[in-house]
Length: 280
Image 1: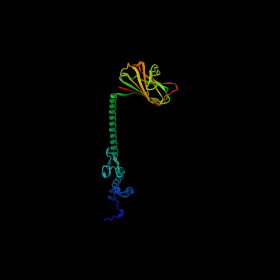
Image 2 (image 1 turned 135 degrees about the horizontal axis):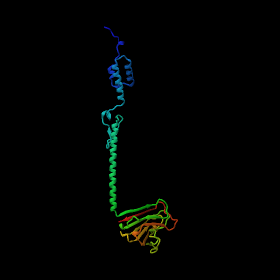
Image 3 (image 1 turned 120 degrees about the horizontal axis):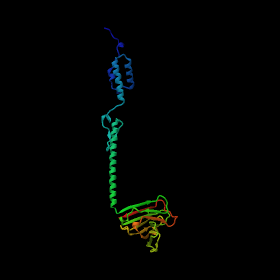
Image 4 (image 1 turned 90 degrees about the vertical axis):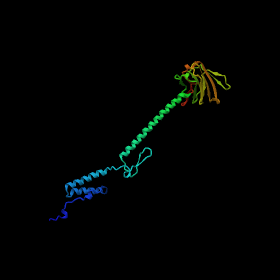
């Protein structure tokens, strides 16, 4: 019987080395095994098996797909929207990102819908309250440039709808002037409550002075055929009180208020505010 020397025996790669958990084999070890398989005199079939195992197992280890969290456990989540809160040892997966984004999208959509519904409800409530309120702002003007005079359009106001109209005027700058209905000069005012009581002026319904606040009240009484009449109170001289009337002009024909200066060099500064309020 022929004895076979150890050197003549074909080399067989130990199976326990091939099947060993790859986590215990470094990359250099795998390279050496691959070279051994190709260079040693072993069966072609075993060579193919070893090569296939090493190549496939290497690809699998490069892109692991373990479950989320540590050791298969679900990772921590936020209290309200269940968003992932990763720890250093957690496995981060695409599904975790997708789930978080879906939760955020759902929460934002619900919040936007709730906000839109609340805004619509508030708008409807304001409309109802405005319709019921006896006190309504009809016009507001804030000047954006200096001007000698200002013209207020009243053409869309139905005086038959209002008991009283308030005209608030707050002129800024060195300006002294009059309030003229439709720009007419036949309106007159009478100063009351001072030593000049009883004196009249045919320059307008009232007089306004620089950097003082005034309120002029008109009394259509829901009757647009009444003649234009008013009372003005203001801050000038510690308090001023005028009564104005335009006996030739009914409210139905009142289309504008003109604030005209006493002298052409007077100017209303930027920020002069004029507001008209209606009382039902």
